[in-house]
Length: 128
Image (cartoon, rainbow, N blue to C red):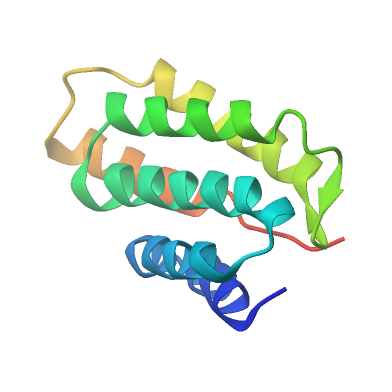
């Protein structure tokens, strides 16, 4: 696992999704061919979480998360020491909660409370 990849994971787990996305993109340029799919999927997850948690985007985040989950479907339970199975389950639950959220809720106390809870429930990248 390359240093930019480790740094991207650390940024992701801190909740710095924008920074993590940039670092995943940097890691993608030097990654082995076998890891490029994983890094690309993680980059999409970071972009989706940034879009949702920092900008309030709903449908775009759902689309990016769905694409990332499809990419990870064939990766097996773990890859590069990352617990893909756990991450996939957490992403699936997060995406389903997001799909169940109101489409037009964009302000107010309910929205702020929802965003607080979503931020706390955001998936982390765990190692096996």
